[in-house]
Amino acid sequence: MPKGLKLKTLDLGRQASSSDVIYDALRDAIIRGEIAEGEPLRQDSIAQMFNVSRIPVREAMQRLEAQGLVVSERYKGVVVASLSPEQIIEIFEFRALVEPAVIEAAVPLMTEASLERAQRHCDAFAAETDPVRWGDLNREFHNALYRDCDRPYFLSVIDKTNDLVERYVRLVLFLTQGLRNATTEHQAILDACKSRKPKLAAELTRRHVDAAGKNLVNYLREHHK
Image (cartoon, rainbow, N blue to C red; front, side, top):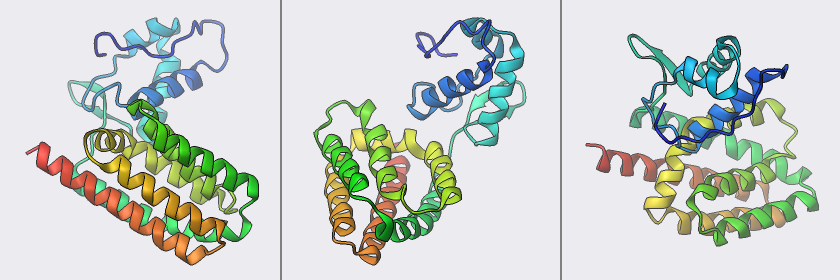
């Protein structure tokens, strides 16, 4: 484990859902980039941090591995997974297919409460100065627009896919002009939803996801040669 890492720990010695809490804490730290890719996750150390046996830690690791956030490597044990530019391209290609379909289905069903919630997240994203919060607000904005689609399986897949790339998205928003572009694109998507134009909202979402993926891959290739 990296020195100085501060996970949201609890004394789980008497808790029934200890594996769930450990899973949530590790997942959050990985998504936020607080544990670097390739960093080993020592089960003994984590068990001590949460005051539990290795069993719930192992269960949490299995769930993280099933989601693609960690991998088991020979001689290293469980480490935080990394993505190649080719894998990121494929993930964003998938998102550019699924998310436009979801928002197109959502627009006719979208409530005023959902639109108001999305506007609050859009405004908060534009005004936020803490890079740590950008990823959360970006995700909350999109979730507010997708939630009325009546496609629970689609939403669960989108959520899992975003887990894989969110740490990279945060990095690019922080180090490039991605925040300004995303703010403008968010408002355009939201305006299309407010105007009840599902096909326009879908096309703007496709462009938004596609541009984010290309910017991310270009940045990674330029700075990780």
